[in-house]
Image (cartoon, rainbow, N blue to C red):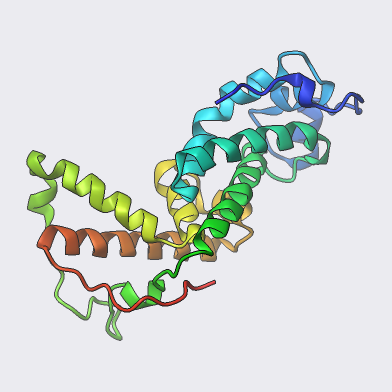
Length: 233
C-alpha cells in the first residue's frame, strides 16, 4: 500500500482545538488528540502518523468486510485521504478512532455491496440455528470440540471459517470483525455502523451463530445450505 502524504491535504489551515479543549468539549480523553491537532495544523508528518497509527487496523477491517485484498487496499487508501481532507468536520462527539473506523467501514461496505450486487446470497434467517420457545437449540448441537483441538484439522477449520465469513452479508461481517477481531465495544460498533447498542450486539451475535453453524457442518461433514435467496437488508 502506498503511503499517504500531506500533499493530498487542503492547503488552508483551520483553527486548531487543543487536545485539552477537545476533552473539555466532549468529556472524553481521546488518546488521538495530539494526532488530531497535527492533522488540523497540516503538520508535515501528520499524514504519516495517521497511517502508522491506523494502517494495520484499517486494513484488517476493510479486508474483513470486502473479503478482497485489492479492494481493501483501495478502501484504506481512500479512507486515509478522506480523513485528512475532512478532519475539520471531526467535532469530537465520538473518539477519533471511531470516526475514522466509520469512514473505513462505510467505504468497505459500499465496495462489498457493489460486488455482491452481482450475485445471489443466502439469507441469514434461512441458516441460523433454530431455537425453541425457551431460547434453547431446537436441534441437537454437534460437539466438534475434539476437532478444534486436533492440529491436523487446523487448516480445515481456518478455511471453513473463511468460507463462512465470505457468506455473511457485509454488514454482519463488519460487526463481527469489529467485535471479535478489533475488540471494539458494542457502543463503538454502534457509533461506526449507525446502530443502537442493542442492534450492534444482535448483529455480532447472529454472525457468530452463523459461523458456528457453518463450522459445525463442515467438521461433521454435513451441509444444510438451502436454496439461494436475497440477503436481508
